[in-house]
Image 1: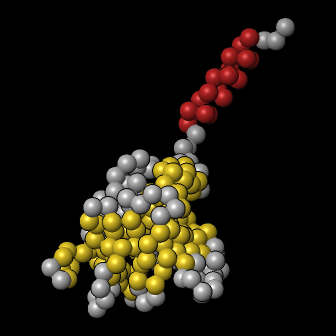
Image 2: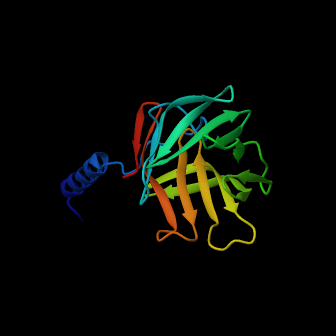
Length: 188
């Protein structure tokens, strides 16, 4: 017969170690805007420059949030579930249609006419050790062009969470760190 004291000590030390183990998953919001827009928000996606919202700007009587990534500035606004994007001297166009059904397509004009497709509205991504549910997957393509296609995933309450591009040296790029509405989120 085994020594009951040894069993109790072993079981207690195992439970104590499990209780003290560091949780390797990040806090992930489960609801909220699919592209939270507030000055100070930022996204750091692996192997890419940080995307930061630096403020707002009124263009053609509409208020946009200024997204800066290195030397590129894009202005975004959300109206009725459609996220419009533009550069300073260009007109606005819908980049992300959050109201679209799966397989819906639309044209996004940004120097070229991209065909955007809502691929899925229920993707669950694994970013390091963290599950990120209910992600919207958008696929971008220029018909007749090669190697420009890419995908962007947006997560509720988080925004940009994953990029995929066929022409990049790193085809799958996950979010490493974000600051959303004054809350820092890291993916260990």
